[in-house]
Length: 87
Image 1 (cartoon, one colour):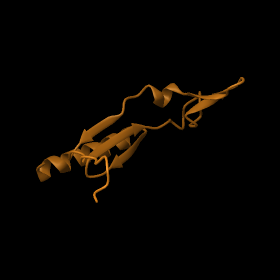
Image 2: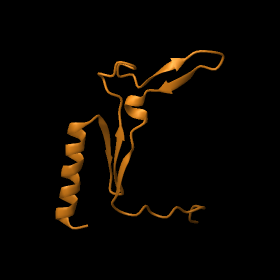
Image 3: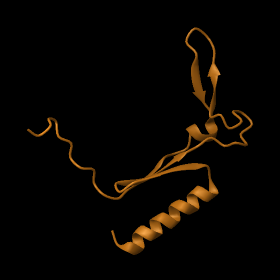
Image 4: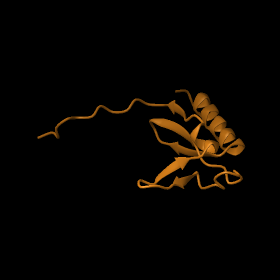
């Protein structure tokens, strides 16, 4: 990937992080943005969800982050995995 394109991708990722509630993960294989709960959400108050009681309590995700898409930009292909270690 040319240097200008890489810089443009990083600038775009920084702009998205500033405008919304996103968590950034970047390595040489991908840049990944995942949504985070809003602190100002009136339903979950930034916790991301709430516990639903009963015999098997479960965490129910709030719509302030659970309904949003993940954004992923692939940079380099992942290396092939070996089934068995070399001898």
